[in-house]
Image (tube, rainbow, N blue to C red; front, top):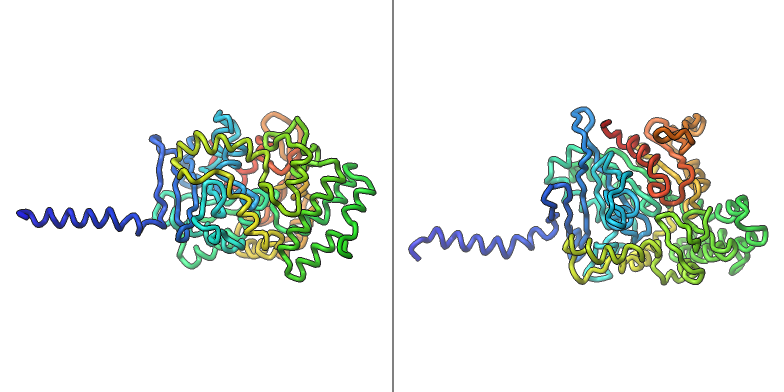
Length: 464
């Protein structure tokens, strides 16, 4: 060949084309919109385990050198609920599930990062079910790996504080992820600023929630004395709640999860199918919030069955979103054809069933003692993660500021020109609590105005 340098060039190019994609398999290869406001892609967080993320850059961004514009990482519940689908289109994203602009989008206060986590959730997938995580710590390591891939090579992202905001089981996930992030930052493996963690109706201490379901519903006239006794009836020689406590104490965590499912069924049958996500409603009521769907009694009983064979993660919501997420959105994001949104969520739940009932109160203490800002917010009419249960686990914290926090008065919150009380809040040092009135499990959907104000406080977003 007359031009050896050109031959070398061709060889190098061929090597790059063949080898580099495999070498970069674990890196965040992103696609973006023409305006640069949206980025998304997959990260191979482990061999053959692929996690999907979607980042929105806020068009409302305010440039203030003293207050960097924040990023919110939203974690959905479940485990197995899709952040990319449910959190995005049902709660806080720029568009609702009809693809109309949402006036209360949290983009007004921060950039948004939605991640389908753990792998197997939503658009995230594994090539072998054995690769699904079995513990919260494994899930936290995976998500930390994704953050390393996204942030370490992007100095723009590194300038913005990251706030991990969560809902339901996502709160439990947020605690373990938060600790993993703190350790990775300290070890200089992860380059980001952790602004804080917010736990919305978080499944932090399962036993504190299951113990109050029946008494709370009795106080609300949703069940009577007979229903209360049924919830405490003898099964295999123990009351249900006591049985769950015994199973947890003896390390029978999968059995405790099954007993939890049985207890939910008893509550449902004794209350004429109360909505676990808003005790002011029936689960089959035709007049629902935007986060629930009319379901038959049979479907609801199956949903809380001990075998957990139906899709556990908000079946009504999932059904509503499936045409959208498997249609126009899937096409836009160029999701692999074999990935069907929501199909994997039940596998994720079952895989984590051995960790589902484990509490993470001590881990919240670790975060507080490390100086991390921790916010708890709770919808007044939620049942599954009721405020009474949340207050119970908060009182178990060993954090040295707890007594002072409990003794100080709350401050009421309003919204705009409306002088009706929307919420109460109080803070001491790096611990903050919001009681959101007339909201169930899905605070941003049920009370969008005050939720937006709350997240502005949490993230200290620059004022417009």
